[in-house]
Length: 220
Image (cartoon, rainbow, N blue to C red):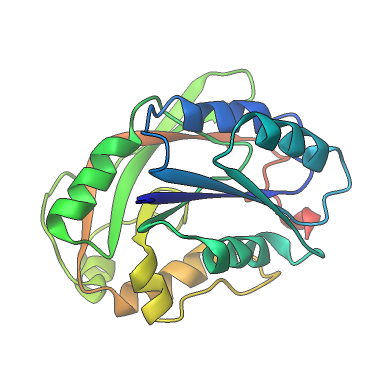
């Protein structure tokens, strides 16, 4: 059974792809329990070439190419093709911390969560830790409206584990080619969520770069 679908959009991110995929490998998840969907959003660099080489090496990688639809459109393609019980969005210039995903999958399973929000490190281009997006460790399940009103949450879609059934049931997809698509998407997701919980586990690292796919809206 595929537990997690990790969706990685690609647009001018060739220099980051191998590190990003390696961070998935370093999760030490059992073969057949996860998949990586890499969405080539009409990238003009050699991102597709690098991803193709990786897909020949690792059978858990699927590559989908499309005309440019922006970050939101690339993620939507990933959602539509995902087979996992949970969906994790991972930008190609970011990475997962070693062996961090097993715990959040286990927690989500135990509590039957629609959304689980975890912490993330903020890392400079030189590799320096410049901050941490830490979540409260309330270990309290709440609905999305109460969560929105009472808990300081992060607008990012990349520090959350989403139930695929939850997204599909509520027809939750990203708006295409808008600025701040993560915040807009999560606002709707929280409206529908019945079971959401924050944990303090730091599971990912976000590169703080002017070239980031999510931190520079010039690309789309």
